[in-house]
Length: 162
Image (cartoon, rainbow, N blue to C red; front, side):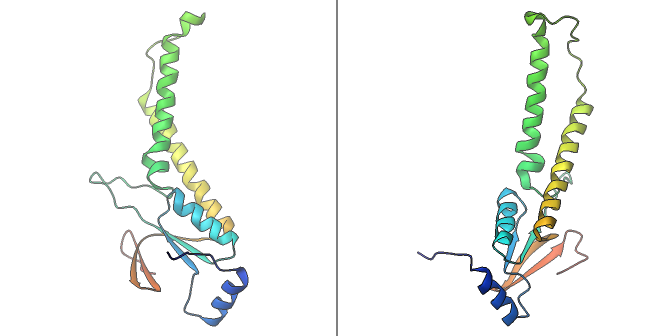
């Protein structure tokens, strides 16, 4: 079984000095929770890190920012909507616990969607700021391997290749 260990800072510095062709010690493909954690942790060990994250639009054209499926269209939005449903149910039963003049059935789907979208955008911004603060280079692009040491990143609009 092969073990993968992150080299020491001194070794990373020596490798960088010895090879001008090596732009990054680590390129992380995918900006979900695992990719974000990995890239930030590698920077803490002194590695030069790039994170490449691209999203293929859904058949309806839906795309999203950094954070992966969970943060953008899965777990987080679902939990916010679930919480709204719980609040709605509690409002329906509030009079049982002495609450008076509680309006029933007054819900704005438009407001809920706006709150969820605002939270997603805030999270995307927080993730980008954290990467920037750690010194991780972020690319909004699709990555593919050219060879064992080369990765091509093409922007979603295919206008830029790095």
